[in-house]
Image (cartoon, rainbow, N blue to C red; front, side):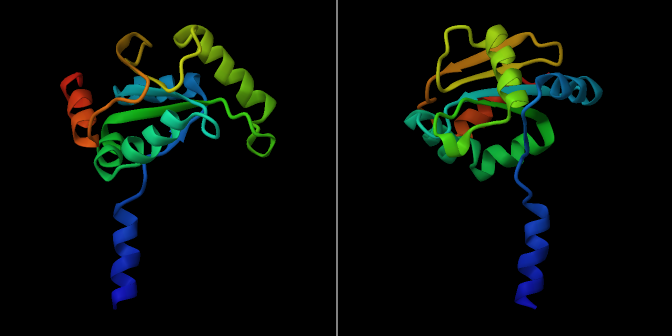
Length: 142
């Protein structure tokens, strides 16, 4: 019985999923009228990026909010050979950076509307709790 309960609980705590294609994310955002959170990350070399992912973006409060309110896009720029992305994904990430992260900041997180208009940016690690981060996002909700 305990195993069944744990399995059922797992069905309701599905983590928010991140996309790698902004164009597809924007189509979803237009269809659902959701905002898009873009996260530029160096997942295997940038300490603040790793901390942001673990402490805020993978927190229960963020994932619960994001699942119903956001479309998530991660533009990752790993350096280690074992973590290299496909050529297609590298091209998508570089194209997105040309538009939203010309200075190459890491981590750099943006909230944009379904048309791509920037609503808020976080340069570096947001020194706040996951609940405060979610509260900021909620204030910017249409």
